[in-house]
Amino acid sequence: MVAGNRSLILLRSMHVPFSGTLWDGRRTAGLVALLLIAVVLFAPFAILPLATSTLPSLAAVLDDSYILGVLRFTLMQAALSAILSVVLALPLALALHRNRFAGRQLLLRLFLLPQALPTLVAALGIVEVWGRAGVVSDLLVSAGLGRLNIYGLTGILLAHVFFNMPLAARLMLAALSTVPAENWKLAGQLSFGRVATFRIVEWPAIRPALAGIASLIFMLCVTSFALVLVLGGGPGATTLEVAIYQSLRYDFDPGRVISLAVLQIVVVSLILVPMLMRKADGAAMFSLGSPALRYDKSPLLWRCADAAIIAMGATFVIAPFFFILSSGLQANLTGLIMQADVQRAILTSLKIAVLATGLGIVVSLALVMGRQAGAGGRAAFLFDYIGSIVLVVPPIVVGAGWFLVLRQATDVYRVAPAVIVVSNAIIAIPFMIRILGPALATAHQRYGKLAGHLALGSFARWRLVEWPALRLPLGLAAAFGLALSLGDLGVVALFGNQDLVTLPYLLLQRMGSYRSTDAAGLALMLAAICMFLMWLAELGTRTRGTVD
Image 1 (tube, rainbow, N blue to C red):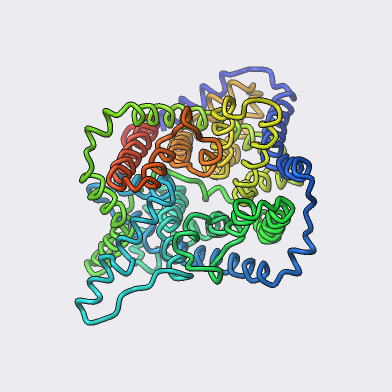
Image 2: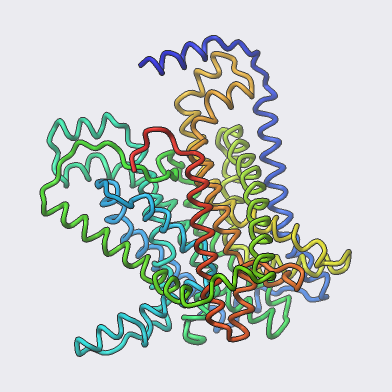
């Protein structure tokens, strides 16, 4: 109460004249951010046809039975992946929220790693666990059963759940963290059982976030590329993203590439738009996963069930990294670190990651503040749509278009670092706005009217209302941005050269030259760097008194 009274007195003591330009300035910043994203993403759709003198034909693509089959498979595997990830994440998130145990924060940081490492590296770890020669198959054979075949739809779903189930669990934990402490205390005083607590307290907090979580995972799975190449198992298990790659890489048919990309954007938009038209709920924000002080008591049987769920979820996520770790430790790590090209790759990756993360946070803040200033309607929908459609615009089309235009104007490899920084920043924006947007909306819902009555100016509103609400989410946004940029391989694969080598690109080179031991060591280094940067980002924004 004392702290609350001090804050109220401080707010009342502020007599900064209110200016209508506050919201106008934020709307302008948001529109500039939208324009930047639109130019980077959609300019290549005009550049590629002009540079290659070919015109797209959507009608021809729609008449192609093979492409229609690819479209059906793309949507089916993405929908199944989203459903499985959400269904499996729900009991895991509930168990993690109900229990305190040593290593909980470390486990939640490990849950970010699947999004950070290059997809190819993680896929190899999955094959080591679930493949025909993997550990699980060996255990099945010893039990008198047959070996697993993870190629095709089964392997794609398994890999997608591995990547996205931990993300969904963290999002659900964030939704649970917004439940007021009084609700947990009341549930304890009324002696709610496990079922009643779920029905009255937990489910109402998680339910509004489910549509956003499912749509995010769906879009990530629609654009799945490397996983399908590794685990798809042939033309019968091909996504649109792979078909786009094949049309550009092997056939070099820009018209067909643009048609397929437009088809992907249009079809996903038809699914995305109804979801965006639903009112967003502030409970869907990310958090650092700190457990609430809960007063509900569970019988021993329920606690054992929670422990089993956490153990199975942790094993499922950590097992591939265990094999990456064991393989990486077999490499000469000291010798690798002493190599000049490895040191340059690490420094290059860190520079790009820091710059991309900083740019991504600035643009994301402009987007969420511009959306808040728009106060709903068509403007808010436009901000939501552009911020989400980033995930389904094929990066290879964007990269190829900019490669062609820059090649005509300048030395493309000279400006490659800037292109990679901008690309990585935009790739991270959909995650960042899902972290920052609900937190800002919740702050304005709680304190916006009071700040308006007190005529707070832009700086005072930021310092007293917005910064306290955004400080923790900004740390997680930075962690996501750093991890995604460090693990990026798609854009670097187009613009990388002997003078611009990142750690994932160097890893790919070592794998291509059959230096698998070195590649395993580099993968371990990349994972360690990601973990350290996530820890650093979270440490800088952790509040005092947080219980791990």
